[in-house]
Length: 359
Image 1 (cartoon, rainbow, N blue to C red):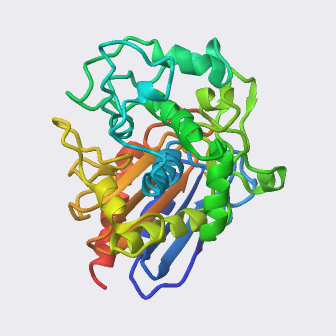
Image 2 (image 1 turned 90 degrees about the horizontal axis):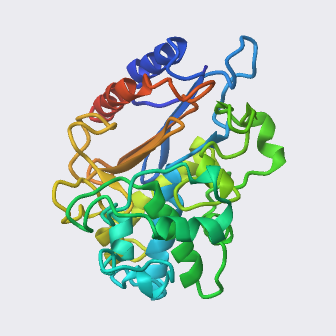
Image 3 (image 1 turned 180 degrees about the vertical axis):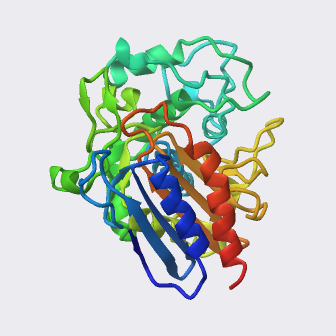
């Protein structure tokens, strides 16, 4: 177990996380808490793998970020394309995606995909029958909608897969998502945060699942099967990174919320952080927003935005309280059936916020 020094009393949060890992919530967990000026506290506990004696986890451990990809990569790239004028959030996607046809879906826009209000279903195991965009795009576009667009939000990986295709098409050079994100991460000096991690990261990467479909333990290759079938680079999953790198991204979001140009213009950042008008939805553009039932607990302000990832990752950012919390775990190791993190996360965030409020 390692913990960085801080004048803020995070001892209860550290003890709680240590206990959660010891009780089997996840083999490994790393947390970073910070504000606009930088990180305030980091703590790591556990080991990379289940067997006793494996390598201890530390702040340099790389995790499969899963659906944090949706906000760190796709939502951010969308903001930048909005600012550059290459992406119109309210243009019907049928004008860009030739396979998206039908009177039941003609009004669907990028805004609808970002707010999970397109009517697309949440998830399908398309990887069993399809590979690459040439197969995935028509398969998704031809699906019957679960409900008419904009009447409610249905959290949809499939919608974000389409967003990934759309952002590749609207880029002036038609650059891949991996290329677009790599250039962004390098320009912002985020550090170890990218699609398709290099082999050099393997020894410090937390394993995910013993995958029966692929017949092997997954280390350094994307856990999500649909993302794997798309070559490891997709709109809904595929990013790998360290807690420090995700923390630097969170700092950029916090500073941007002040109106300073970091990742996008102040106007665009405000637009993306506002809760949508979709009935009963907590979704903003890409992001989720704070509810008393959220994974961030009950102590963050109503201005908080965040997201979780299937592998056990989460990121919550509260501009009003000037703080962020990055929690990275590999709770799916050795199996995805371990869901105990769902009960753990709110309590953990409540302890973090209780300590921060004493500043």
